Amino acid sequence: MTLLDQQTAPAGTAAAGPRSTPHTAALVAAAEARTAHNYHPLPVVVAEAAGAWMTDVDGRRYLDMLAGYSALNFGHAHPTLVAAAQAQLDRLTLTSRAFVHDRFAEFTARLADLCGKDLVLPMNTGAEAVETAIKVARKWGYEVKGVPDDRAEIIVMSGNFHGRTTTIVSFSDDPDAHDGFGPFTPGFTLVPYGDLAAVEAALTPRTVAVLVEPIQGEAGVIIPPAGYLRGLRDLCTRESVLLACDEIQSGLGRTGRTFASDHEGVVPDLYVLGKALGGGIVPVSAVVADRDVLGVLRPGQHGSTFGGNPLACAVGVGVLDLLEPGDLQARAAELGVLLRDRLSALVGHGISGFRSRGLWAGVDVDPALGTGREVCEALMARGVLAKDTHGSTIRLAPPLVVSADDLAWGLDQLAAVVAG
Ligand SMILES: *Cc1c(COP(=O)(O)O)cnc(C)c1O
Image 1 (tube, rainbow, N blue to C red):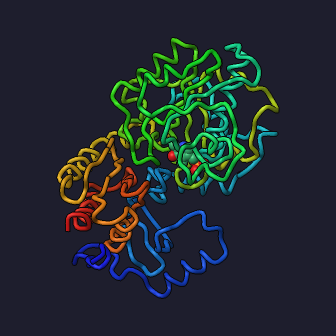
Image 2 (cartoon, helix red, strand yellow):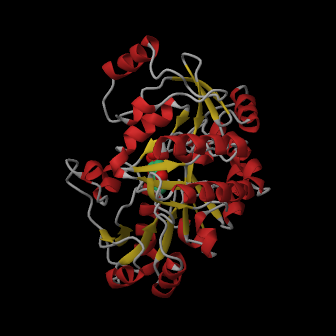
Image 3 (cartoon, rainbow, N blue to C red):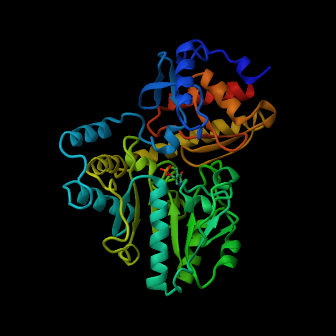
């Protein structure tokens, strides 16, 4: 018997009912027919959503336990963000950076303040922000640290996920992400994640930066040993190396703090932000750093047509309105206790282990139950949408606005799937 055979929607819940209708199947087939198969989505066709709930084309409702890989930390259609976007749509959407627009200063200054830094460089996607951090670190290395031209090295971590550009996949150790896309960009040294001594051993006089995810989301919500980030901070300070924290997935409230680095009181030299910065409405990313670092860029040396556009800034200001009071971070911490306690009770009952911080968990399903994909299909049949990451690991990252009752219900569905 497969996981799917066991599933029946519990009475009195919002669960999905039958797994696939002809309507859904036809739309899935149509979507596949004319697109590159660089994704393998669950066979659900979403038509609308609000808060933590999505509705498919057949009117079935699903609890969103992925939240767009944390791009939807504030939930679907958050009223503050929708109002900000709608008001801006009627006024001004794009100027390019050839001209200054009237939403730019507020967004960038408030984002810099949230990070406790001097300057912001806005881009669009996460990968672009990572590329920006790499370029800035290299230029800083040549102009400030005195590294010989074209010899800069950046230390990166095993299991990393920083995006999909050719330079970024050059230093991925995931064969799917990397293989077949060479020739690769040189200048990166890969060391085991969580191993401070390995970073120290890899440092050379040409090292300009250490690029790290404070928690590795894509790898399965991998949390490094306590003291690791603090150790990286001290090492980088001592050796005149920039610490670049990719907080694209871990940041903006997900872990119960504004940034995952905050858990160790660490302030990186470069914050790399994305995903939730655009409120799930538009792509907004940024590198945030002090003047002595970002100041190495001069006109013409870097840019993006859409980076920092008025619509992005308006939504970004809405995101800052939601983050500045700190309530959502506190909520993620509180709900995180519920998440952790419920998952703890499942260890040995269908899950072999899990890692969590705030409202974010990587759950290792007992491989005997099936693949992560099969578990996600079974969850889908019960009205919960989540996504497997590597092998039998499922990432849980519901919107931070999810109610405690809905979260508990979603975890009931997980328990029913894995523990029967
Ligand atoms: C998603 C992600 C990226 C890439 O962001 P895109 O917007 O998909 O380019 C980079 N780093 C981390 C940690 C991510 O989770």
